[in-house]
Length: 91
Image (cartoon, rainbow, N blue to C red; front, side, top):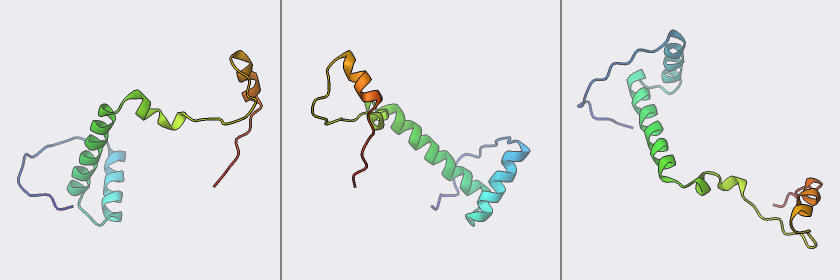
């Protein structure tokens, strides 16, 4: 990702362990520490914006599902029945 060389200079203090991690990752990705930090900041801000725009249902969507089982009891009895339930792996 090519970033223009113009813009504001931002100075950030990092701990020695974080500095070592940044150096190692920049070497592994064959880029500069500055470019790596710009990329990480951009991705982090993009993700934070996406998460703030989503609803609670969208963020917890992986927790919702449907159990299609004939004879499933209703109400309080369903919890007892589902405690013994084992999901099938289809696919």
